[in-house]
Length: 411
Image (cartoon, rainbow, N blue to C red):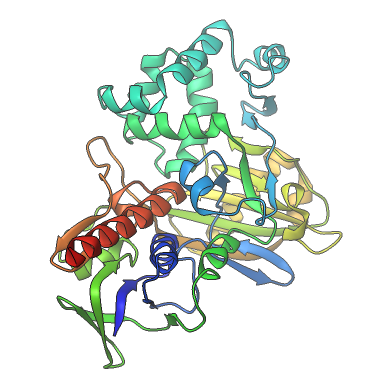
């Protein structure tokens, strides 16, 4: 028997378990896979650090600042702004609110003018949490039009940028969510830990006592105060069971309908020389299949062996065809961007991730972890929004619910 059983060692489950342990509760974490972190994991392949799909952390996330030791993660930052392939040439745009000197360069590139600076400043004012909470909820696409961005900035910069964030090229995403993400991106940096994104889950797991995480254990059945594992074992919880097993498994265990998935695909390449610097490179033409490219080793040299470059070419969704067809199409597209050097890149791996996120249209954002029924709390980013911030917040809120119930039981 444990005080609390947490199903799932993703970021939500680990944050919840760590907070409960810090309050003196005996917590048992059950995880079906072979490691911690959920979707936020890193594999070492031929000396390269490959995150499971292209992933980044915004260090402006409030929950990341609350839950993580960011200094210990040794964060490496992308440069603000982007390189954009549009109409046959590469254009660079800086962050106009951080570096006003980049404005003339953007204007010369055809990507920004006075109206866009005004729209960005307006967005910054309106994206504060209190203002966002009371604003009408529309789609992200409608929101960008409402703000008054010019068509070149909206279609060649903002659409591919946020398509990569939300994995939805149509931007049929809640305007409240894009406001929130814009505010967090504006207030901080886009970063990765030096040891890969998997270091986030590893840091959270390290706060738990040795032996409190059971890996490779799939939960078959959920009872009022117990869980039955596929191995036949039964674990009993004294105070609560927290279900944070990923969107599909959590919905299956809870007996509720799952939202639509949003997929992503990432091609990882080994190259001798980096084709770009520390800015993300966007497909301003939106012809695909690649939506954005990041030279991970330029941002974090520890992602690649000495003398090599690691390139992440990320696609929105799951492109049709087999891996060979996708690789050929991606190489053809990137050859136009970077030249014949692309022919010499070595493919390390292709990640096709069906459930990278869940759909987040207007009206779908969750209000946080909640009691499903007596003794069982639902958590995970599906109860908040599909982000690291949402996962960490849902874990904290689940822990708060359990601790409040324990206080009531003691009275």
